[in-house]
Length: 364
Length: 125
Image 1 (cartoon, one colour):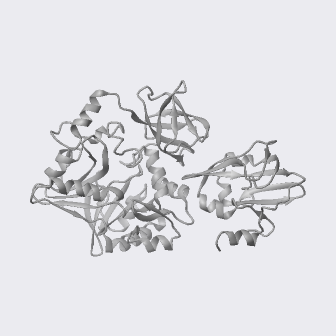
Image 2: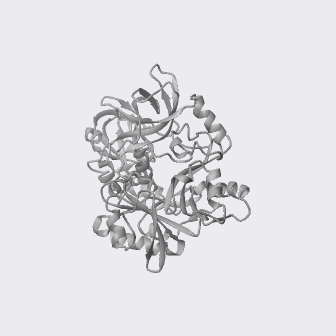
Image 3: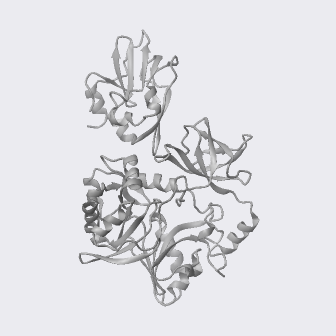
């Protein structure tokens, strides 16, 4: 399969990026002269810029567009108004997660969905299958670029670019860079103050170059998917395909806050309500190493008496804490405050079971 | 990038021979492939090692690699500084980022090791 490339591909190559396949796209993992730790630090202490153009973009338009989204995806669209965005989930009828995504509510007849690269087509297919006449679903995956500017200096960088800043968390505003319209959303996947800039693909170079130029005095670094993963893991943000999946429901992932439980209908509602009331499904919890072990996805977690108690779904070295952290799907017998053992390639490493985030979020 | 005074293993370790002592580290190529190293697990002093056996691990933010013994002998020293500063393996792989010192067995021929030119050629140029 030929990998898709971001409109910023040449910039990544010029910056000496190590490229990797992600969701069918060839994207930067880390950059020369940086590396995951330096890129991670730039976001926590200054500002980092990520090309996340692999993320999908689906536009849902027409009379009934908002009702379609509200009646299918989990979150209650009524919690946000025009100009606001929301984290939500696309579940199947058994409550498994087809994808997690962001919905931008431009108006009741114009919504932008941002699903993950690998799942964008499937989300589109499911929506198209049930869309009433008059609602159009347009896949803009390769037509739109998304650039995330994240970190305490992101306000200053965007101000220098003449783009809107300072709006509420998860709100978006429209700005201009030259003659390019840029949607600026106060959102991200790092736990820092930051923005995600949506621009037509042929405007991506101009936005990227402007961020790098405006960020120079603030120590901006281009950041790859490696740092994106360590940053989101420190926040305990789930990654679809690891911590959320067709097998790991929002109830299990403790993502019930993104479900509109009072809504009469959304995909997976009956199964999820049953799981929530049943209280037997395993739950996603945080693991923090007490020793030197670094948990990795797929490793077995053992309870106090050595019995299997679950599986690590994500794990990494936390650059901020300088210790191993991870997320694990654990049986109900394990709770916060307990200590568990993870089989780290034959070594028994101890971890505290904690409630994420591992590092305090500064998104607001 | 690949000093001429060192020998190299197919598993991307370098060996500096000084009398009967071999200092072992990983090559610049290996540290570059691993990315930022965050945890180094080394064999204990006194442990006997033989070529090809797994004697430790190098873990980066994103992956784990086994460390293989490039020679046979007994571990006489390990780089304790890497417990607190594993990143030195990235920044100075041939110097401060050394891993272990081994007293090489008398009958060790070092036959499986390459010189710098052969190692570089093995990387495909």
